[in-house]
Amino acid sequence: MRRGVTFRELAGLMRRHLLAVTVVLMIAAGVGYGLRRTPPLYSESAAVMFTVKGSLADSRPSASYLSSLIATEVMMAETLMTSPWQSKIRDEGGEGSFDFTPFNSYSLQYPNYYEPGATLTAVSRRPADVKRTFTLVFQLLGQRLSAMQAKARVPARDRIQALLVGNDTPVAQPGSPKRVLGGLLMLAVIAVFTVMNFLDRRSGRLFRSTRGRPAP
Image (cartoon, rainbow, N blue to C red):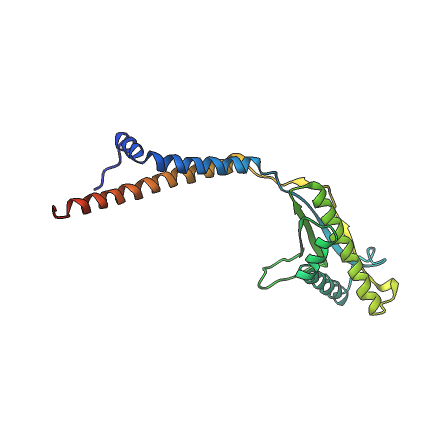
């Protein structure tokens, strides 16, 4: 049965590989400093509901009515998340990233869109970029929806519209710096032991190889 490493042996191991240990700790300290200096992420999120003008008072919509709204919602989500539309939003000044995801009660592989709604989320390091990106995406969504229906000659009273529900100001995303730094410290300790163990074994192999050579 292999015995544990004593404190004296561990101290000797660290002295033998002091340079390597110092380099690993300096790298960990640099990463930790970078994490501390990185500004937090801000996000803004709200529900986007699809409905027909004047239909909000209808408490029992038909199945075909809901199906049409859900189909429109999914189509708009797929349109907004394409590369051309993401490039268009960036060109218009939307510097933050965004996501437009339909409400799904099942899974990504087998989605079940049970109501005509989606979640619009914008994320950036700067609150101003979050607000501008969020507003711009919603505006372009409305413009695209209106243009499609106008081209199809849908009567104004029957057109689908998108409404924001629960819109708020950008907020800092929750996180725990202490937990992140604790995880970094644990990784640094593991890295130190790994490097010391590797170098100690390598130096041992070199020592045995040198001893095994015939004298000149």
